[in-house]
Image 1 (cartoon, rainbow, N blue to C red):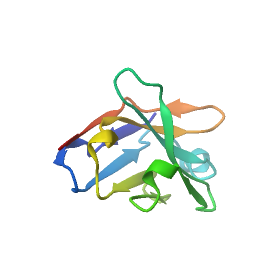
Image 2 (image 1 turned 90 degrees about the vertical axis):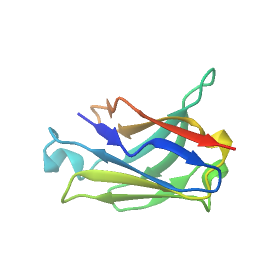
Image 3 (image 1 turned 60 degrees about the vertical axis):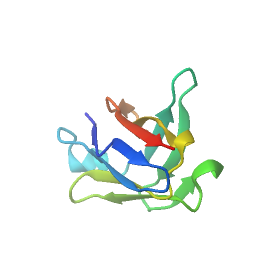
Image 4 (image 1 turned 120 degrees about the horizontal axis):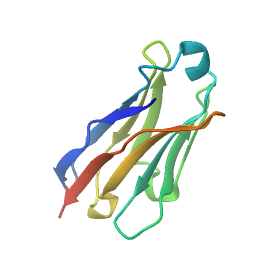
Length: 115
């Protein structure tokens, strides 16, 4: 139901913009949903990065505050994660999540930050 894109290799201090689209989700299901970005680094548990409600209220993990911005475009059924001032410790697979119910996950997109 969810498809991420925009990952890649970037140097420390650089920026990336992740996108997540829901091509098969109808608008009436997408729009009321809280949408989240998670990440999982090798050998670590998946962790919540940012969240945006249907009212566009946002929350961020402390380790990305001031650097990452989550946003959504309901008309296009997309959610974005703008990542600035990237650090090597941001290296992970980033996953899009639609809280639901039912809950949906994307397949993930790899972000690698070199020092």
